[in-house]
Image 1: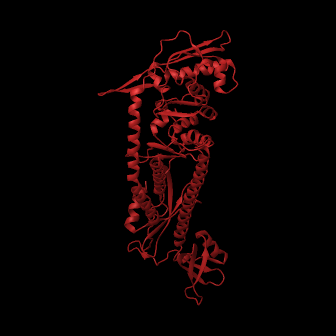
Image 2: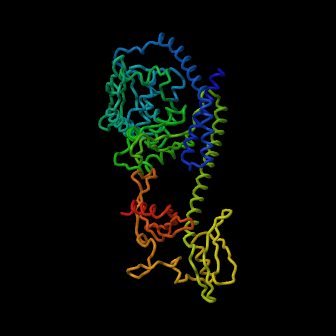
Image 3: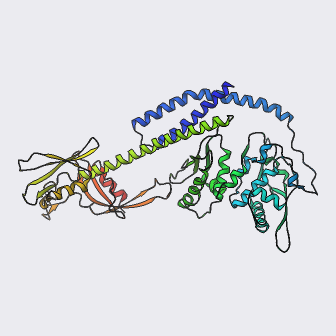
Amino acid sequence: MPMNTNFDQLRKQELELRKLLEELDTFPQTPQIKLQKQKIQTYIDKITPSILSGFNQKFKEITENLSNEFEKEEPTPTKVPQTTPTPCKDLVVSAPKDNAYTTYHNNTNKVNLGKLSEREANLLFAIFQKLKDQGNTLIRFEPQDLKRMLNIDISNERLSEVVVKLWDSIKTADFWKISETETSIIQENYMLFSRCKIELNKPSKDLKYLEIQLNDNYQYLLNNLGMGQYTSFNLLEFQRVRGKYAKTLYRLLKQYKSTGILSVEWGQFRELLDIPKDYKMENIDQKVLTPSLKELRKIYPFEHLSYKKERRNSHDRRKVTHIDFYFDQLPQGETKKQKQKDKQRNKRDIKLIAWDINNQIAKRNAKATMEARLLELKTLIGYQFRHNDSGIVLQIDNTTFEKNQMFMHVSYPKSKHNPQKFLVSNKTFALELLYVNGYSLKKDMLEIDTPSIHPITNEPIKEFAEYIGKTIHITNFNVDQCPEGINNYLKITRIVKLNDNRICISIQDVDKPEKLLKPFIAKDEKHLKNWFKKHYR
């Protein structure tokens, strides 16, 4: 017993650490991040042999127990086809839990039931609850039975519409029976119900009764579910979930409640939820994922449900291939009190991790913004300004970043005034500061250095003039909502050489000219030329 407890703890630690590694991959790979990843991976490598040993021990115990069970287990006897149906109220429930929970084989989750409306889904899984462990019994449901199963007040006429639409949807559902032999895999398609009889009263078309009989080929879906290959959830909780997409996602997540991770191939995900083919990525986010997560986060253990779109094993890195959902792993074999403690602890841990991640993202964004402001401020280096009254000339010599603050260093050529430095927040503030103090740009100093004279035209040669004013086209593919990318049109407003001979290119968003953009820094003129050639259309 201690062995199993230790194994479960190590396995849980491994899953949490691997999840943390994935989160760290999204951050800039600084030396601190790399060191943290290395420590985590070292610890994972250290506990992996113990986990593998635990897996082997568990497998050995399970196979030893199953060997005896397989010898004793007998298939569910197939009854002679009934002529007289069994009333729903007379069904014998094998376990008290079956009165509140719906349990079925996991293969049911592979079938596209996403086209069912909310009420149709509520009714189908309520019927599944009644059919569980009943073999191929023909069961009759009276209107009052169905209303009680749906837990709503509904008219007989409206109830008949729900029943008929449910049958129409189930008829087209792609149920497959998959079996294996020593030499082949066999796939066969049958109707889920061998009999479904709906009788309506005339002329009102009110429902008189519904008769259902499970097909013999699908008895494994609802009978003898003792091998762990099943999904189980509280029927009333499921019926309270609002939204057809949220209901389907609820069922899929419940299958993986013991691991806390659901990974689905993107095409299969769209098929299982019956997402319209004309829905683009932004439509799926707005109409499927966002409302579904909002609804499911009201339910334990999905309070912190999140998802991530993955691009795996694809030559086109813009194409989403999988979607992964993450939620709190449901504890097993523990008391309710202990589960509540774990839930509260996990909630605190997840909040702490979320705060840490958001804090690092905020710092990263703030750092990027500060770098952009400093580089923009550096474009003023070398400019001269003349005082409107005294005629004193002020020259900007340098800009520095000291103790999270930016300073502009100025001198006064041909004057006895000592150099000074001013605290500024950005380029605009610096220019306004000079303007308020009576300085204006010295017109004959628009060029920092004395320009070279062209030998033929005898006119000044303006450096980088062929680039100024040109519009470049850059596509941003790092956006989940728009896998085809977002097009940005950027105008080159100014180009200057920095002290270290790098070239600073100031750019402006054509659509949002007021937005501050981080300048592009080229290593040299060749780098600038190649960059311009790549993005200029």
